[in-house]
Length: 305
Ligand code: 13P
Ligand code: SF4
View (cartoon, rainbow, N blue to C red):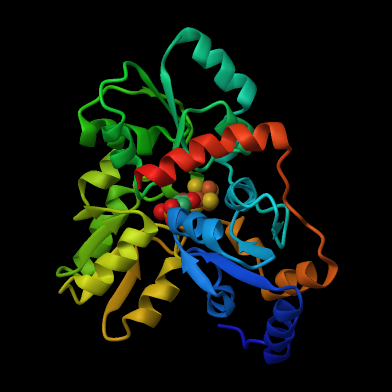
């Protein structure tokens, strides 16, 4: 790994105090970004943290929908996304307009939206979910009639299987996770036969079939901490290996594929964090009419979690 610029880190920590800021980082962020964060977590944990922080500024090291979710939950705070180009391609696979059209086909259906969506899409949805609580949220809906699940078809088909409910799916997917294939897992497993295989629910169904557990990134962190397994193969974005190795130095972690990189997550660097704190630019805001409706869907999820 490249040498970390200590001066850069000190400047960030200094400025963080001046701006009364908290730094939140997703588990896929670069190691040096995770290391300076006040809190690292999965999408659910990050939104829960944003909802309760008393900091005035939130520096969100993640992708756009995550910063937007913080802005939905914290209207009085300044939410910075160090690089505004850090968007999630899956979130861009559905628009509010397209969802309104879909709803016309299924009048009265309940819309469950994955948190990987824009605020405008959340505003058109009944309840939000993350990969950590999607099964729980859909189970808790009970017998509400038809459910439209957007936008991840692979998370959706897994939730349908786990809950026994038939869901109307949207053809979205994560380009990073869709590239993780069963044959890659089999190859790694041949190299490390006693390793447990953990995959993210955004992986394809055939990839999930060859895994020992299907978990959110936060679930993987807990599994690694609590399980007796000494070796694990991770079917998700490789940024998580940094945290796993740091927290469990006596265990060994292998990515299914070194190619499983989310390029947008990697746009957040120490340099862009410092720049955003200096300039207070790249503020993520959500117009009030959309925010109020989107907040209903996010709060409903937080109450159900
Ligand atoms: P988690 O909520 O499991 O951290 O996943 C977020 C994500 O974007 C996965 O690609
Ligand atoms: Fe989006 Fe996939 Fe990146 Fe997660 S890993 S932020 S779903 S593109």
